[in-house]
Length: 411
Image 1 (cartoon, rainbow, N blue to C red):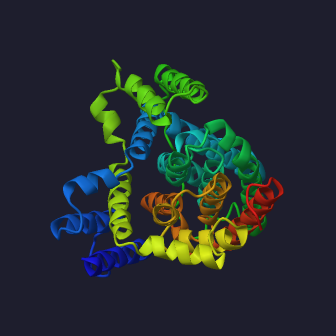
Image 2: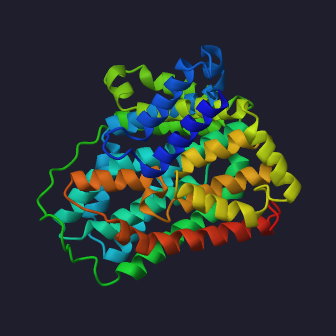
Image 3: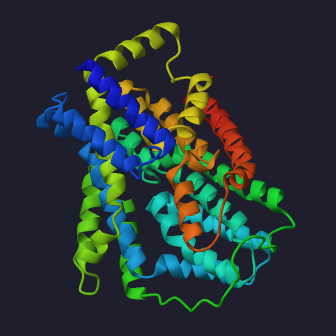
């Protein structure tokens, strides 16, 4: 049975790295789900073990935040915000700054993947209508969303999982990670400005601009969303499990006279939830073999556990840009029981910021590229890397110094 588990585990993470298997249309979620099904079918896991493997508090927080974000989307806020930003009569430097601030700020409280998914199409249309090249702004959108999401324990899926594993307080997390996240947003802005300086108004190789109709904004529904967000932040100050707080707010959002619950649930990223659940099961099966525990013991004896920056930084950089930061974090936490609190802050910061390095490094990057392509804008691997590499390396260096100076991680 160990051989079966190892084969399915290896095939799963190979699929995470490749994104799909050659000749097949199956994506990362499908690959993980099929592997989990095969673990169940071969008897490597029984039904009880599979259910017990899933970290439901993490799934519940993700689901609740997606429903809250659906309230914003249903109000027209994301489209309105993207179009207002794109059409603002500002210089390229100021427009770039606004995009970085908006994307980073929203991602800190509404999860980065949701923000970029909603904002990318309308941002592309608005920028093309102004005869501006959307590509540098899209790179800034993805980079700032990743950077801003690193600030909070609900900013992205991997942070949510890390927060649940370590029972991390929302406000303490913000105090530790907020500074490096803001610095990373500044690095995103400066890097994109320097790399694309003088070429913001040259839409080479992108579609012709056209007028975009104004986007209606339902202020009542937006007011509900803002009130719910503020209520959630207040609940985070109470001694209440985070998943309970998020689900309570999501439940209130579902009770509406104008927005059908079917429509709200239709905006939930079920693919991401299934991916999480399947990876939990696959990593649990590997844990049953005893191999991860033995490996952690060997690494601890050799002094190579990722509780030091010298190990964590290259590990986060390699993991996020091979199998992706979400699968990498799930895999590491499954193999490394009881990591210290400082290492969890480091893992959240560094794995998130490392996702800016290359286009496949984070789900937010991939979403921006795919949504932009549907709008007629092609964001290439090399174009992204010219900004992504310095953005990631500089922001990770700042984060590493911060973690060391604050005493959260040893060098």
